[in-house]
Each structure stands twice: as C-alpha cells, then as structure tokens.
Image 1: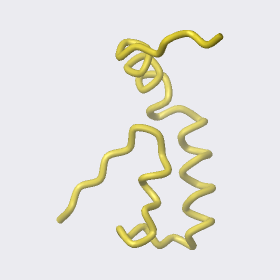
Image 2: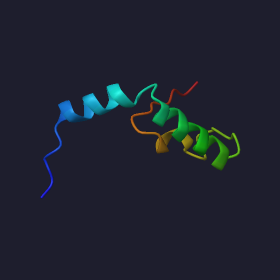
Image 3: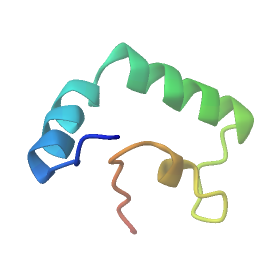
Image 4: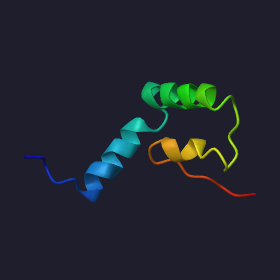
Length: 56
C-alpha cells in the first residue's frame, strides 16, 4: 500500500523543506493563527515539521 518511510527519507524531506517557500508559508500561517504568540503555551513550533525549540 504505502512505501515504508526510512530515516533517509525523513532526512531528505527535512533538507528540502528547511528554508523552502513551503516552510515559510507554514510559519506565516501559524504565526497569524496564534497572533504572533510563539511561547511554549501555544506550541506554535510543534506544528512546523522538524522544528526545534530552544528554551532560554
């Protein structure tokens, strides 16, 4: 039915997605949805594929 997803597939997707127009569009849409509130309570970055958060 579906092809088995490998770690290499995920790494390839990440390489293509990071910095892409698609990622920028996703981020802008979520930023608007959460009214610019990017704190951990809204989990905005959890909705972006392969995003990483840094706690300060």
